[in-house]
Image (cartoon, rainbow, N blue to C red; front, side, top):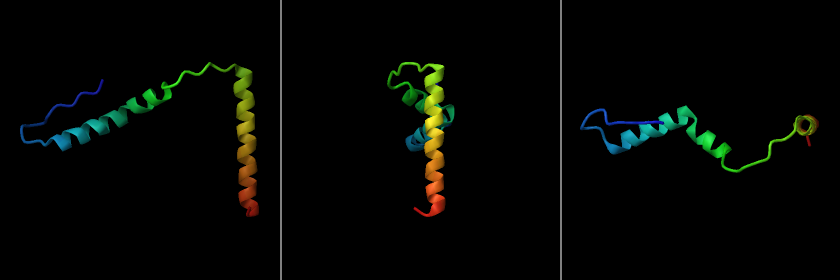
Length: 70
């Protein structure tokens, strides 16, 4: 859990919020929450492998089209 307290009585609220946001980003809290936002069934090993192969083939095709100038 990320906690932020005022450094002194003169620190403004905007500065404290800015420090809080920076700490939350560095901790990766937002990314963890976004990844767990929706439930998805765990894929089998073969399904992950197939999707990785398809993804790599599409990436190669896109790269080759860029090289050809399309």
